[in-house]
Image (cartoon, rainbow, N blue to C red):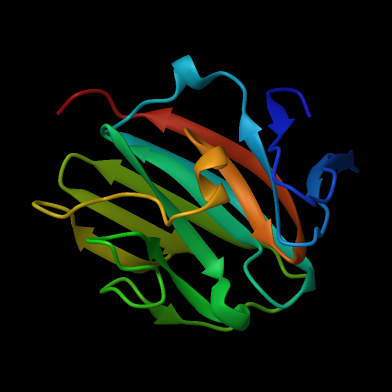
Length: 177
């Protein structure tokens, strides 16, 4: 858990480290972890990579909340019953109802490689090397969905009634461009 702390969601499952993997246990609703060195997190011009696996449950196994300039958004993988991927929120619309919405199958107990790149006018997401999101954020209102997910700021990973494993989490500052 070095560098991470439990997100204090009500009814959350407790995170632990097993075999070098960060395990987020299933809770009554949201469970998660936050990066503890907020000052080291870029707000723009960065790439974040990690691997995530759904262990058990039927909803999102990776709700990756990241800074986007002076705001934040969440990449949701496996939401709304297990198949929705997208960004929450763009112009007040959740991942299930905006232009980033994708319906994908997330096989349980399979590692997924996730890459997210934030630049001043774009958010790009790769899943296992395939680009699934490329959204121009110019003029869009970027924010988090209402509710406890705000506790994931500035950088956190959450699950919803699902347990997951995380590994190989890296952030790379791309500098100013």
